[in-house]
Each structure stands twice: as C-alpha cells, then as structure tokens.
Image (cartoon, rainbow, N blue to C red; front, top):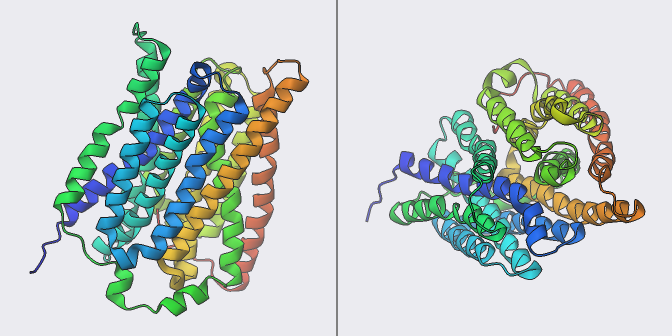
Amino acid sequence: MATTINRTALFRASCLSLLVTSLSFGIRAGTLNDFGSVFSLDKSQLGLIASTAFYGFPIAVVIGGFVVDLIGMKRLLVIAFIFHLLGILLTVFATGFWTLYISTLFIGMANGTVEAACNPLVTTLYSDNKTTKLSHFHLWFPLGIVIGTLLVYAIDAMHFSWALHTSLQVKVGLMLIPTAIYGYLFSKLDFPVTERVASGVSTGEMYKSLLNPLFLFMIVCMVGTGITELFTGQWIDVLLKKVNDNAILLLTLETGVMALGRAFAKPVLKLFAPQVVLLISTILAATGLFLFTILTTNAIFLAAVIFGMGVCFFWPTMLGFVNTNIPKSGAIGLNLMGGAGMLATSIYTIFMGKHYDNIVAAAHGDNSTAGQQILQTTLVIPIVLIVAFAGLVIYMRSKGKTAPLKTAVV
C-alpha cells in the first residue's frame, strides 16, 4: 500500500524531539548543583552523573548511524522516545547517585538516538533545500537550552513554598510535555527511506572514506570543539556560582547568542570558507573563555556573549566541512563526528569533576576560585585549536579550496 509522506509534520516532530534534547541540557545545567545539595553529592559524583549524558549520546548516535538504514528512522525514534521517557521519570523519582546516574544515561542515549535519526530524516525530506532546513532544525538546540534555563530561573524566582527536591522534580517533569507530543506525532506518521538507501551509495565506499587523513584530523578537532562548547555550557552554573549569583543566566545568554548566530549562518558562510569560520570561531571562543577566568559580577556577561559568538558555529560547521569535503562518509561520518565530540566531553567532565574537588581540598574547603581554575585549564584546548585550524586554512588554500561553503550543515 502506498504511503503518504507529510514532510511538514515530520519536520515539526523532529524539532520537538530536538527540543527535548536541548531542554535536558539546559535544565540539567540549572539543576545539577541543587541535585548535589539534595543528595549530598560531591563534585566528582556530579561530574560522573553529567558525563553519562555525554557518553550515552555517542554510544547511541554511532550505533544509530550503523543501523538506521536497516531498521528505518521511525523505529529508531520510537527507541529515542522510550529512552527519553525512562530517563525523565527516573530523574523525577531519583533517590540518590545511582538513580541519577542511570536516568542521565538514558537521556543521553535518547538524545544521541534523536540525532542519529533526525539528521538523515531532514536531509531526506528536504533534499532540494538541505542547508535551510537543517539550519532551522539545529536552531532548536540552543533555543531549547535558552528555554530550559529560563524555566529553571523563572521557577526559582517565583519562590514557591516547595521543598528543593520538589522544585527539581517539577523542573525535570516539564520535559514530559514535548516528549509525549513528539512521541505521539511520530507514531502517526509515515517515514521515507534514508537518502543513502534511495541513492544506492555503496557501503564499502562510505567506510573507506573514514580512513581519509582529513577525516581523521577533523575527528581530533571535534574532540576539542566539543569539550570547549559542551563542557563549559553544562558546568557553567557549577563553575561560576561563586563569581556571579545568576550564573545560570550566563548559559541562557550564551546559547541565545548561539541561536541568533545560527539563524544568520547562511550569510556568514557566504562570506567565509568553513575553515576560516572555524578559525575565527576558535579565536572568539578562547577569548570568551579567558574573560570567564578574569571577570567578575555583571562584567562576566560580556564573556558569555563573546564565548557564545565563538561556539555557535563549531558543531554545524564541523559537520558541514566533513559533509562537503568528504561526501562519501555519509551519515556514519556525521554520526562519528558527533559521537567523538560527546564522548570526549564525557571523559573530560569526569576528570574535571575530580580536579575540582582536589582544588577545593587543597584550599581547605574554599571553592571561591576553583571554577575559574578549571576554566583556565580548559582554555588550553581552544588555544591548541587555533593552531590546528590555522593549519587547516593553509592546507585548504594549497588545495585551491578557499570558496565559501554553499552546502553547510547548519
């Protein structure tokens, strides 16, 4: 029986599923410190909990990348819905470290599964207009973080007479609403086959392209861009709580700048080649991170603006560069890039959580500067990336590839 593909409805449901992904990031960033207080968790334990979302994502996105052509995008999104539902409910009814650990792992796996299914879904639905529609899709990640952090801030500002734990349960439980909606929408809709299946691209050619030295170089760089963007954003409330009373608003401002930047990504990428965009972005990100370590009170919001300008193009331009210059890597290439960024962030978060506790212990319990010291350590990463991307600019110039990117994934 013939199926009818409603691409508008599928696209809207995809945006809702990505909204849940980004809400989990924003709300977790705004509640992580409070969960530590409720369950008497130290920063090492909080680091382990936060890291599960980041290694759950690469596990799911890589596995999803391998099986999406076999089982179809609809089945993959059913799995994402189940993981989201379990993760949110387990967080709401968490009783301590292990329930938070497992629930955050489920959410991370759900987020990765959404990415593994929805990126090929959007490119399949809009094969004639990929750049614009992928831009609209990925815009929901920073927007969702803004919404999530503002919800956390608004609930706190209302000063309800709830216990702290009840307040946390309400904040996390709000994610059930868009989760239920996207699950219902996807269950009622027909899906196309992936673009790769439709075009008949060889699996062998796709895997062979993963050994391209340029692809391997970009994987390594993705490790650095992922840590710079995601670790700083996820831990900003913890790291800068002693510097500014409204540290969570720093994440709101930073991701708001990211959303605005991605909205105008098309004209930016018409002006500059992607490798140049990456170099400029890294310089801005390093500058913002440095300002985080030296500014205090409200002046630190300037650092958030500059940092947001830097990281807003990291993820989409990295994917766009690989998609354009190593096209045969296909969906698995994009999924491996995303997985590398998230896995590196997970490992880094674990080590930095332990490092934070060691700094506090050495200072006899004084944690007033611990967060800034962690950021000083992290600053090394974008500084190294500046050198790497400068080399990439020179390399691409030697290949005669200096034109702005016309098919960026944004």
